[in-house]
Image 1 (cartoon, rainbow, N blue to C red):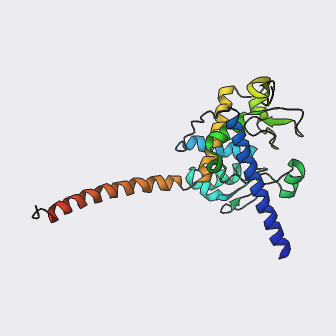
Image 2: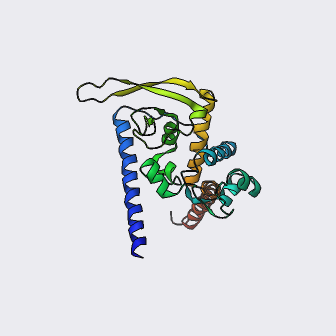
Image 3: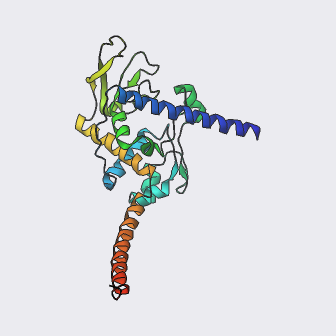
Length: 253
């Protein structure tokens, strides 16, 4: 029991450290003059969500979990059959109604990357869909990093560029550091072309970010449909209340 409590405490502290690192990285990015390009992700685009799910499970789910999502919920919301989900999106052997785990063991993640890769269920809600979109597009070669990769949106990230075969390999050019000012990012240069064009990879990054936006609030479709009926009810109720008030007070004046 004591060991379990200690493990839960360690996980909680690790989550706090990771969250602080993410916030610090975003603040540093903003203070350095960096701007996030809009992803133009449309959560109502089911085809984009389906493609994002396919890309996420093929490239991201080995390290990252979606501990608040179930395979069955993904199938229902993304208009997929159970067979499609189990054959194309489930690589862990989990049951259709179970939560989405990661393939990697947490201890292996700590050994390989220095920290267990975070769960991504709420990443879009915490950081924003534009942040994810720009993060996926901003990896570059950096020989000083343990895995040979760095990122301009989240400097010194432990994650390698798992999409490099699609995007290609790019290097980053920086303005030299002067005085108290650190080196400032200028632009990327293509070092090796990938299998996709720049426009096609933009769609890949957008679809993954869009799927994670959906995963952060899977009830968004129900909320939207219910919200329409609520607004209609309130409109009708307001109209009835107005006529009732008018009828009730008509003899007072």
